[in-house]
Length: 92
View 1: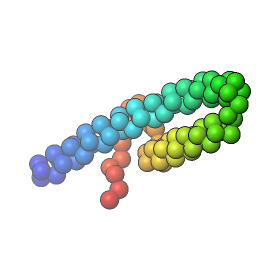
View 2 (view 1 turned 180 degrees about the vertical axis):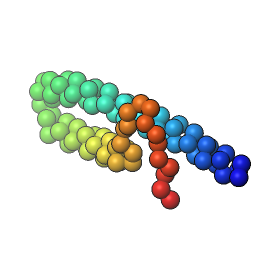
View 3 (view 1 turned 90 degrees about the vertical axis):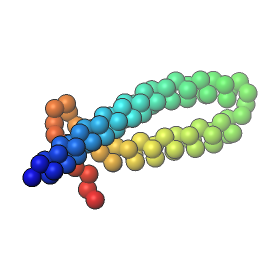
């Protein structure tokens, strides 16, 4: 059955590309965490200078919650695997 062999190969290719995208997104989130730490430091200084700590706290808290939700959703989708490990087909 040549058709089923092609289908399995195509599914393997799809899963490999999918995993690459997921890994790229996760790496981007890791970079975002680093940038968030820098931003947090800068916002603290700015908040102390302007005296608007409560307003900044609300905005910053909402942003952190959204980033955490996005990160959790992506990492629960498919945790990163080491190079060379096989990918499993997506469950229906």
